[in-house]
Length: 439
Image (cartoon, rainbow, N blue to C red; front, side):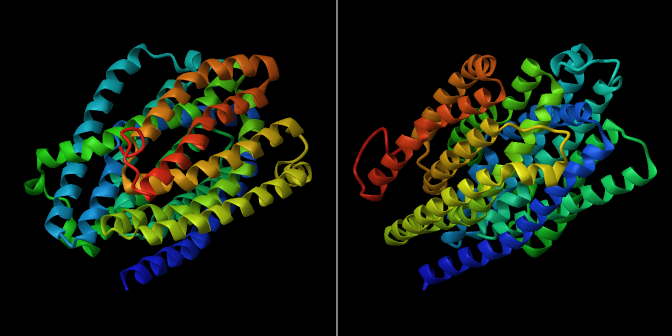
């Protein structure tokens, strides 16, 4: 009965996520030409690079968000509401304390930071960059705390609700950007404030609504327990290191391209990457509900369900490879239809982005399952090695082959997980004892 309910929840969330995520994808695709018509390619590249740099703030939760997701899933599987409330309360107030410290530190350091030099921006083209960064960083900090509601819904195996929040944030963004194109002239500041502020508005509304629905786990200072913080951080700390490694791999590419080739070259890279990321997004819609379902199944010892769902995910991955190949063959006319002929995107860049997507989705099959089980030590090691190699490799290959070289460096660095994670999965599922694969 529990197995049937778990599978049913996963299927319902996949279909709901397809609708919500599909709407988000459509809006994000429309936002590219709309924003490019409002800003020039240079300013748009600056915003893409700046947002990538400031995304670093999200990993400063020390992995508490993902740690909460797993621990809350376990508590709910055991129907221990008091423990669930303790996990939520401890995580929320810890995040609040962390972000206050981070913002105060940033406010002090901001006096000595020159963002024009950091992002390789011509000050004569964008004169108020430091003030833009100040306000955008404040929005990122608010999002840092209130995004905990997404982890709560995912722990309840309702990941589609988290996708709904993204859809609403994107919907608010496109409405505001459209109004700006009608009533105001191009402004990097307005675009930055809208894109960073819209998700915060949605989460500020979602936060009280969530805890009216789940009153039994609403955060309370009296339920904060430091001993549980250590437990959350033990698992969360490993997620934290993995998050940092992933950001080095996925987010610093914008900064590297901006430094090597100029902010305007970030735009064609992001267009190609966003196009092929549609496959990754679609695949993520399917695997996201699996994470917390795996936690429940593993807690209850249902290994047969885990084996069965893994086989299905591998067939879906194979189908995603075929879709990626079709997208590659159709890429050139779709780029022209989407953003016009002004921005040239070479075939080699599209090819390497397609290869990256296939490797990334393969890794996601096993990483989401292993994340749900909570045995992520090997993933931590492989992620650290990959992140240490990425920047020097990206600089070398970027100088040799241009932007495709930077993406190629990402592909090479993912290969560690491509080999190791499937091996770890076999060891876990067959209960083979190993200090490397069972931690």
